[in-house]
Every structure is written in C-alpha cells, then in structure tokens.
Image (cartoon, rainbow, N blue to C red; front, side):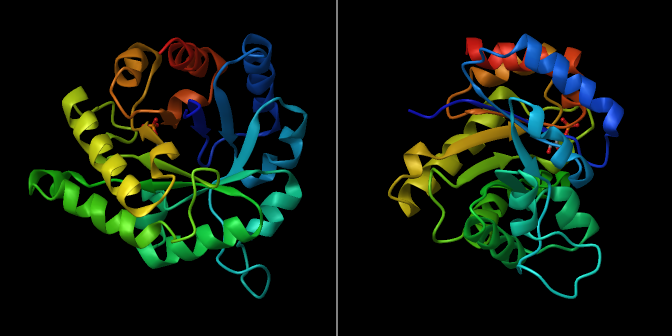
Length: 243
Ligand code: 13P
C-alpha cells in the first residue's frame, strides 16, 4: 500500500510570519490520513520543528561538508530537523545547470544523511512538442535515481516544466500515460518499485486536485504556489484524503 503524500514546495518564498499558515494547516489537518510534507526555505526549517508535518529541504550538496559557500549539505538539513529533501527540481536543473548525475549524487548524499528524497523529473514544452516526453523521463529516471533508491527513501515527482507556475495542466490522459510509464520503469528496476510513490506537480490547485488524484498511479502532489497559503493547500489535502 502506498500512503498518499501532499507535498508543498515553498521555493524562495516564506518569512517567519508565514509560519502562521502552517499553524492553520495543522489545526485543520491534525487527523490527516495522508502524509503531509512542507519544504520551506532552509532558513525556516528549524522554526518548523513545532509543526505536525514532515519537513524537507529544497536542495542539498553532494558532499557532507567543505568549502562550498552558500551550499547546504544533507547532513545539515537533517541536523536542522528535515526528514526529506527535494532533488532535481526543474528550477535547479535550469537555474543551476544541474545534471542527472549531479542529482543522483545529491540523492545519495541525502540517503547517507538519513533523509528521503523527492526526485523531480519532467519534460519541457519543446520536448513534449517533439514527442520525446517518455525518452526524457527514461533518461532522467535512469540518470537521477540512484541504484540504492527504495520505496522508503525515494518519492518520484513528475513535474512537466511547462505546467509549473503557468496554470497549464496536462490532460488527465497525459498525466496517466507518464505515471504508468514511470511505474513500469520503477517496477522493472527496483524490487520494491511498485511501492515507490509517484507525485504529480505543476499548477495543482483545489479546483483540479480531485480529478488529478483520480488518475491511476498518482499518489499525491508536489505543490508550489498553492502550498503557500493554508486556504489554498487545505482543499488539496482534503481532495487527496478523499481520493
Ligand atoms: P506550481 O504548483 O506553482 O505550479 O509549482 C509546482 C512545482 O514546481 C512544485 O515543485
């Protein structure tokens, strides 16, 4: 049985005053039957320890410590109270030229620090238009997901780059096709691949969550903009619990 997961990626948003949103969310979902993960900016991880939720970083370095100004290691995230870290988000792939092998190295650093990873994959619009979506997914899965990934330490997030922050969402058939493809690849490669959770991400909102969660092999969502406010994230959690 795969437990459903509602994950919020705050990206570079959030000050201490915004922690009140988590308080509100906790009051509404204290008896949630789904897992809830919040990935705030690293500056807020320590302050999130009071919340009921799993807390994650948004990136980590591939090594434990050293002369890497501005970077954060997986061990530091764990020390601050995180239990997860997002690796390979498309914004990091694009803004910081992160490659599949770098993402695999970061993910392995996360495992070594005792963190679980949410490894992100997804095609650009040009790749979708060129009909290469599944090839891109295969390349990213093979290159970014380490050989020692398990259903306990790894969640896959399918985030089509063109759907992130745009209000554009793939059709349910398109989501279903990619998720089924990812499931087949995970099952073929990992003994517990059938138990690895696969999240959809990209313009998920309260208004479209229920239909997305009804798609086979969608085990939850990785939510950006709509995770910042309790009023926006709460209906998504409710829809997931009802799915
Ligand atoms: P939006 O939900 O804002 O489209 O962002 C999705 C995302 O990138 C989550 O990691």
